Length: 355
Ligand SMILES: Nc1ncnc2c1ncn2[C@@H]1O[C@H](COP(=O)(O)OP(=O)(O)OP(=O)(O)O)[C@@H](O)[C@H]1O
Image 1 (spheres, rainbow, N blue to C red):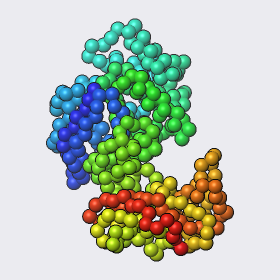
Image 2 (tube, rainbow, N blue to C red; image 1 turned 120 degrees about the vertical axis):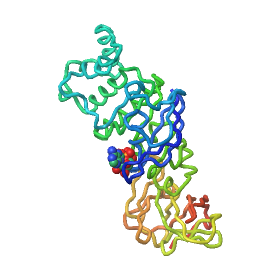
Image 3 (cartoon, rainbow, N blue to C red; image 1 turned 180 degrees about the vertical axis):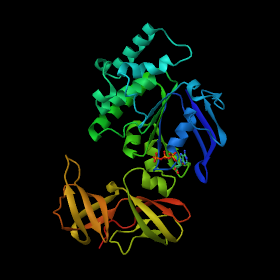
Image 4 (cartoon, protein in one colour; image 1 turned 120 degrees about the horizontal axis):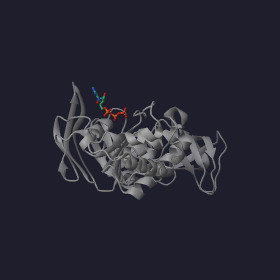
């Protein structure tokens, strides 16, 4: 089902948790809300679920105005990180819970059949008699999903659902959840502060900061065209370097980093340089290799010290470095933001420089 949010404002005392958020999610889409702690992600999810009111603005789900529609009538499946399973109930009873409390309660036989189908779907059919304490974190997450899916929701809201899992299991479970989304086609909104998770799972990402959506785009578009310095710094891996624009060139001195040509007015600016945009080659320079890691066939990945900053960089193909070796840097490009917020793509001014 599609979701359309218009101008939602939510205040808690003097805190503006949401400052006029608008958002459209397409039917069947997997969208991530990505932002730092306190940016309003959970509040937005709770407003959608009907667990939180709003001071102004509207929410339409599948074209229907949700004003005054209580949470249990919205037909939305919710999985929160801290929304623990009921400890005194078996896995079976946990999954059956949403069906048993329905106004039009299905028969016991129907409930049992549906619970077993769901436990097959989330690949833990053998666990139905166990209690939450007797299964692993990954299995608990699968059971929580089965419980959310039991009511056949039109919309699935996931709030940091993988936070409690260790790194390996988390990767596994999130791939599986994306696969499940693709096979069921349920519109899904995932809240996360982990950009890797958002990039791996979502069709589009809404980047939030201080109660606002700063940009809503595909991963590729966010990386190619970040709308603000905040987005450039928050999405993807990039070094954030202050610089000074003069006569169409961004200068980094005193750092031994070569200048970039940019179409920006003179004045202070911030450049974002991705590791693949910084290339180190042999030669005496003021930059020093602190770490050199070779992986497979690609160029070696380096950590290079330039002045007092550490930069992730790539080695010139076929070159490797010893720790402590000096090197020369060239910059292939980068996003540069003037103080006014104006943005420009930097291009190399001079191929070889740096110290
Ligand atoms: N019930 C509440 N009472 C008072 N302030 C609240 C309440 N809920 C949220 N806030 C405040 O609203 C702001 C947004 O909180 P929210 O939980 O939506 O952020 P978040 O992006 O989900 O953060 P996190 O990633 O830490 O969960 C924060 O400043 C928070 O302290």
